[in-house]
Length: 91
Image (cartoon, rainbow, N blue to C red; front, side, top):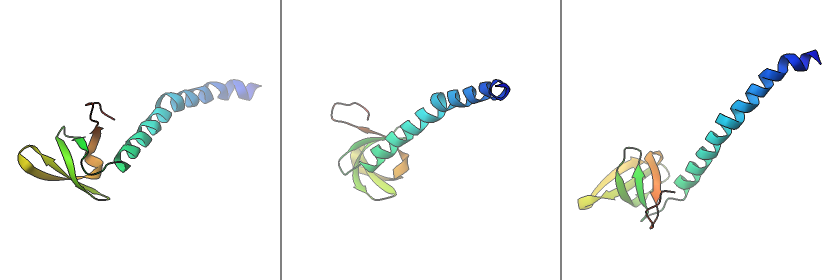
């Protein structure tokens, strides 16, 4: 019983950290990885730097975006922040 009284608060803090910090972060990372895997040609995306563009070519590690004026830029696939749906909502 004394051991529970000693380790109880520490165990409670670890559980709180897990449910408040670690678990939500893992969930968000899983959602981001799924979004990156589902990218395809023609998708409208936003990069981490805030650049809007349309995917014209995609490989395992790189994405080529077409932006205003027909300019094509090459980014790391991990630089894609969000995929914009036809409704204009971020996914």
